[in-house]
Image (cartoon, rainbow over all chains, first blue to last red):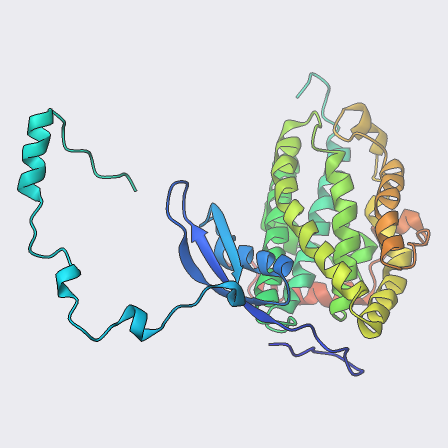
Length: 117
Length: 254
């Protein structure tokens, strides 16, 4: 992807092209979601390319563009997938619904509406 | 709009020059699709070209409302000699440095022209220009980023950029070729200032950038009154390309 077409003489060393992760917000209030990545030599061009790949059809209201090397990467299985049984940390089996309904009735509050998307 | 009679002939000349500029620069730049220096730039360049063709569509649409006909017919059914784009755009695609040099010259000139139209009294054009300006802001950011990188990218890229500017230089000011019946546009409040004044503004605006980047300044325009005619062989070829499909089945509905 760094080939220079039509180069007659030896080109100067090309700047290092690296990956940038792009997060996009579809509309105001939405969470930022990972959209994908672009390759670019610097932050300015990365922003231009992110705009073209993730915003040119007006599908985003905000982009975050992060150099992949700046992302804190955590995939250590000892931290994330420890071998002992941890099922007791999961909330399964503990039913809140009836208790919540009773608490609401006691305080006279209505059930909140689902958050609008 | 005011009670002033519309200077239809002068508006025709103005719209035609702007629409043809956007159409020709957009079509020329679209030739990079598939062969730009990196994949992301390929997509960016194709998208920018589509933007320019979109501006051309809107401007041809205004022209069609004013004088009859339709946008497709205006874009495709004229002979090469009847196009009124600036001679700046008649140099063929060239290498990446030539394309970026041309884009920089054109985008900065177009920005000055648009600024002189945005508050104009003919609201169909003033409203359209207000929208176009917002898209062109990004185009300018994109090409300024490239001009910096080519100028500061070492002897090879600086040399290519300098050579490109030397080739384009004598035609660079042709975006500001005086329009037919230009005083009527100014009297009617459509255009804020004569093209000659806009050219001075443009030269003053880009001068500091060229000085900062160590680039030769733009020379005076050669044969400035013929700046939108006399297009030459490169445009004949481009015209044969962009009329090919429409010409293959005249009158067909696509």
